[in-house]
Length: 380
Image 1 (tube, rainbow, N blue to C red):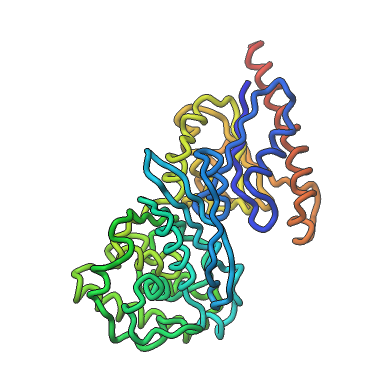
Image 2 (cartoon, rainbow, N blue to C red; image 1 turned 180 degrees about the vertical axis):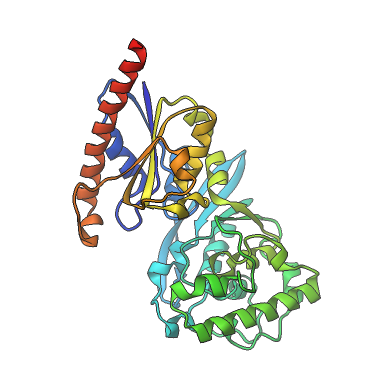
């Protein structure tokens, strides 16, 4: 029998590969075990793609949202004989690298992500995949544009959120000479929010990044001004393109650079040929750090369960934290479990050794339960 583990990383605790390995260790040697590192486009994306396709990680020098010097990896690989780069935006302008308060959200920008894209271009790639999730910036992607097109924002200054500065003057001619003109740019996201308005990036996402209601109102006002200027000069309405509000407006910046926006999980699962692996499995283990109704929106457990449903393969989800109401997932999953055996503190729940041990133990119980039902089916 064949068991496949495709568990999304538990952020800040353990990687997808480590979690899969621990879960599979709970199954005896008689089982064929398939470890498939997986991601919906956030943390763990490079690992998932490199495990499937190979490639080389290249360390890039850049700056974080507050312009502090950092180094982070990008992945250079090959897809359909085309040299391709994968960049995780959160590695360069992530929420974990930010200071979450109203003062710092007014100082942060996506400038460093532009440096990472430049580094990928220097590798002479033909395609760049950029994941849009977990960012700590809400600058409408203006920092990214200033980094890639130095003359686009004549008034751009470092150590400030460019969206909150005067944004009345732009050099639209710069777009004709974009360094991305010969590179296919694809943004991976799991949200469809527009650029501005009530469902735009500022009202929906900026508060979790530390912005006050006053700052959010100004952000959205400025985002609307920029959107209107784009519509006036380029006949492009960012609010008509789903996902332009992703990652603090980075989706809008990519659209301005002729980039495409795609759903993260379906794209990654296609690249790593996940469906082909799923249909040959007898049992699938998936999961994520926190399993709840939000998992239905582009997250790994939902994507895995939908694919497995086509081939009638049972799917069991394992999580560090599990809500009672999982929405549609309750119908898609065969079962779901929290891996902790007793009440634990957040620090204990985040302990890698404890997490991996608990995962192995619960997987061992799942294996015994699965075999018991298989035996009963055979004897009836």
